[in-house]
Length: 232
Picture 1 (spheres, rainbow, N blue to C red):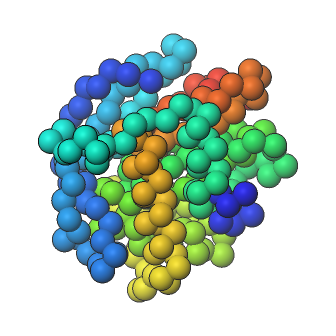
Picture 2 (cartoon, rainbow, N blue to C red):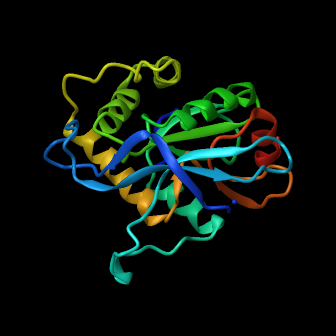
């Protein structure tokens, strides 16, 4: 599947998230903090999943004044799963022989994505995840995503990055340069995220192992809730 770059719900209560501003990815200035402003970054507070902890994510509140033709229509979970499998590019971790991976679209500057990464570690022996970097939070998002994808060991690099981000240090240092083909991957992943009409990251889509149903949700989860979501 093209989703592996290395073989590797809805109460809309929005609050300011870390006083950051969402930025669009610019083809001419990948790492520039002056990337075009789309909207403000908000905290999407979602209800508890199956009574097991709350969900939160860094979200893109779409411009409500945009022309209808410019707005995307949310896909069904099954449609989203197939689209991500066909178009998304990321790195794979966990039980590599598992038949159906769980796809996670994340922004490297999103702390909620970091919390989900941490919560997912206990499930790696029985679940496969494909982490797909997108860029909309700030100018660091795209180059850090590129650094993760091009690392010799993306999983180890991601672990170090998320530890730094959650510690308040901003994540791993920015690379000196980004190969054009990797820049293109981050941009394509971000277009994919917008096409899905997802409202926040981390955005995850998976086939529940127990029910076979395709499920989708946005936001961080505790390990027990994530296991229930995946059916593992």
